[in-house]
Length: 111
Image 1 (cartoon, helix red, strand yellow):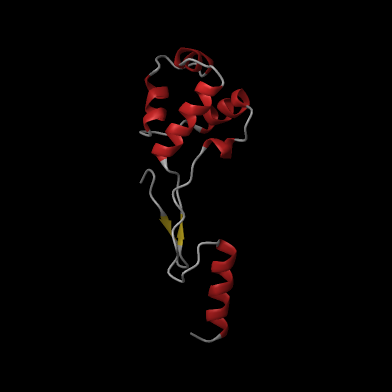
Image 2 (image 1 turned 90 degrees about the vertical axis):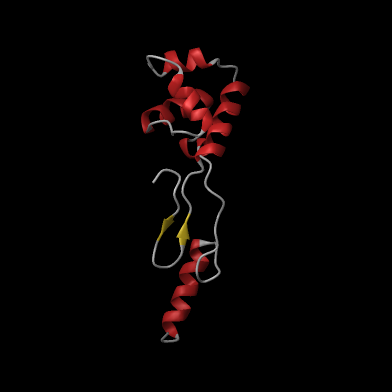
């Protein structure tokens, strides 16, 4: 289930790319000069392993940890997550708005 792409009846919606998110988190934390031990203490974690698991893309931080990281790194929570590469839907559209329009056009044609 983790990192999976969710499929709906009109096309595909991307999930979160765990590995690229981990690399992104590691880069941001390093850019801000925080050692893993400091992140561990700020997150009130008993050991540093969860942080290393984030970096390796094995797990995502909890919502609470994402919130703390967003404040610490001065970015919105969504900016901490990297989506999977956008995939083309069954109708050939990658944009949700275009996908909806494509679906609407098909429905209008009675198909």
